[in-house]
Amino acid sequence: MRRVLIVDDDPKVCETLDRYLAHAGYATASALDGRRALDAVRSFGPDLIVLDVMLPELDGLELCRQVRAASDVPIIFLTARSTERDKLAALALGADDYLTKPFSPRELVARVQAVLRRAPAGGAAPRVVAGAIAIDPERCQVTVGGADVQLTATEYRLLLAMARAPGRVFRRDELARLALGEHFEGLDRAIDAHIKNLRKKLGGDPIATVFGIGYKLVA
Image 1 (cartoon, rainbow, N blue to C red):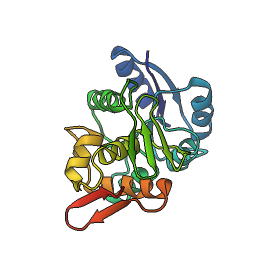
Image 2 (image 1 turned 120 degrees about the vertical axis):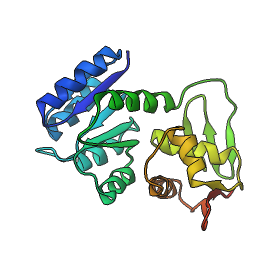
Image 3 (image 1 turned 60 degrees about the vertical axis):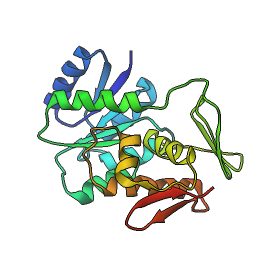
Image 4 (image 1 turned 90 degrees about the vertical axis):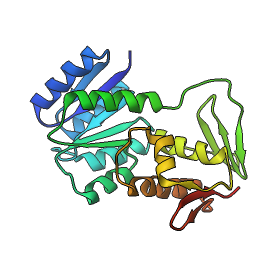
């Protein structure tokens, strides 16, 4: 059973999501502030985190930053903060999705299902090599020059798509479909934020911008 950690300072939101997610077949735990959430990440070991931004003790953005330092667990932000700046800040920290309040619990469950379906899965797929970058799809492992690189699930899918066709130019909407799903309706700049994170982690700037079109991986 997949585990979902709900982090929100409103007990009613936690109770509602717990009920809907349990009905969908997920095991859940909840935390009402950032400090307790950080403890729950370590003890509960969630497969996905639903995270509010405005939290006592430790806000959601800082919590996301600390989680990302040690884990690539998928994170969906669920918050009343709805500006483009807020969304891009969350995506830049490694969030996989962003849903604003007021929200539909059924839509949230659907997004949880979609993100978990897109999580890298094991298999006997061959290694993908593009220059110094090597990807082992069986282990969901990425190395650059032999050194391990920790990526989020979304970053991994973006890199894998481009590494399978180095030199090919991918449009932003095409990358969004490949990495975020056919029904992704987020900001165009969401892909830009993920690419920016990838460049930092990979080093050497292997991802080139093709102005007015999108991106390509330079092998």
